[in-house]
Length: 222
Image (cartoon, rainbow, N blue to C red):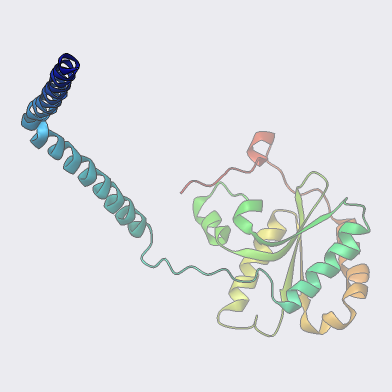
């Protein structure tokens, strides 16, 4: 029995010694790893700081570039047509576009610079930023008529000069120009059938350039 007790004690002491030694070896290995990385620690910190700095710089430059595009970024959406213009537009669509089975199509707030062309830059610039309330196009999407609505708010400032410029440019291009007044709203459908439709029926083909490619719309560049 005494022999077994002595053997057990020896095994227990050996086990404790082995565990202690392994623990010491593990601690030494971990210490060695940290000791190896310690000289590189400033490098890792520098890389981290550089990455954060570059990210912040990109955000700053992006916001600065965006802010330089506009002096004021408080844009707001506004109605395309007022109530009277909506009434005219819907009447034009119903009595011209629908009843013609889409032979004619009606568009609202069309820039003259998009439907007219002039090789003389000065003449083109006079109409480029002006628009007509409604434009009627044929099945080939060629403009054939410009329809204006002259409501109560139309007669302000130099409206006569604006109207004259638009009317002359439109008619020089061979298109119909017609103005609808506020008093026409009460019988707008009759006005369309008795006045506008005959104008469209009698309208000749709009003037085109000899080179058909020049009639293609060119996307503006900014």
